[in-house]
Image (tube, rainbow, N blue to C red; front, side, top):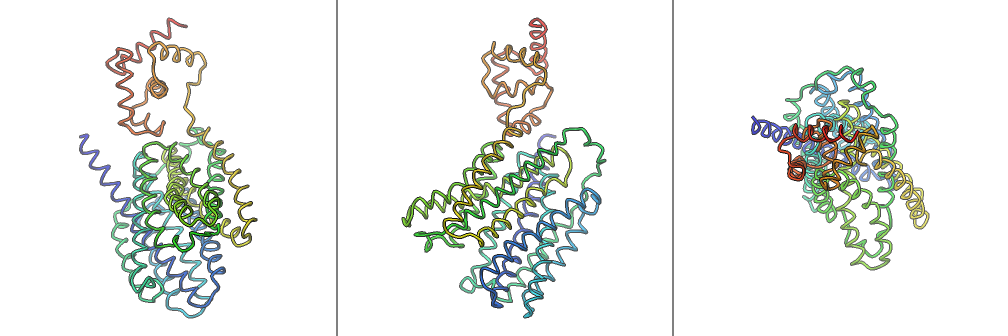
Length: 458
């Protein structure tokens, strides 16, 4: 039975990985094709950047927001196959219009509708990550899927001396991959219906949701500003083909680390924002600056993974799929704001703006860190004192104390792992140590021994 559950979980993880990876592959390729088409029609690079990474990201955010609204109002439609299939065909038509039309207004309009569709589809895929994948597998599933989509988009870019996506024939490649992805959409079924009233008073924290969304907005804005810093001595060695490899590797590493411990993933995400400033300190030293930018692209994966996992975990715990997309929505709006800031400011003003925003991010980060990742203590003071005395008597370590407190609450190993953002195997290891130190052989005996001791203390 246990092996069957593991096999089923593995199958679901592989399915969601393929669904997200293939979806992001063709959507990312269509996004790039449309941007290159704008350049081919003679739009200045700055204008194309404002459209592609500014206005079009806002269109994606609108699409993501519509998915959140639909999961709240029409969950059966949002979670089924009809929505992603129909939107996929609309996106393919928009890509065709962008590639084959010579009218600039048609290409720009098709780009806006295409990115709205990309937002809708991204929202549909991300909710599947929260609903169908266990919390301790979400990092590697999303990181692996996004790395696949990112690296394969680069591989598609390579033919014709790196100009394949500039060519009208690229539409056929995008359309074929999009049609293949429909085979994965076919098995989708709506998630079980829920009564919104189930979550009333059950831990829904509006302030936490707002704080997390604001943090991710500023995170993404600061990241965009930082990656707009002048390259200096590394301008000849840091280019898209070169950085994609490290970004893909970073996504996988970020997924593994975040699944191991959410705290580590969060801290690495914050650390990633500092690399552009370190690169500036190297001045014209091409070697040192290149190494720092390589590390920056490796750590960039932590931001991409963290903003998805943060709200996927919140969504999974609350059983409210509409929250799963908030991380990507806030991220896209932040990237759009960062693009606008990078165009409006250059040189030293850009660095100063980014530095100020970095300070704001640190403040919001530690506010959220205290709310989400700080150890959970028992509510009643007397119980806290009794538990502390019991654990001190047997010399339990800090992590064993965290786990002991949750065992007393009646949590299973998997529930403890989810609560402390560690793996289930790590929980089992510490539970074994607790049994050895206390001389108990089971949870029931441990709880009974603790309660007997606490009664004598009281």
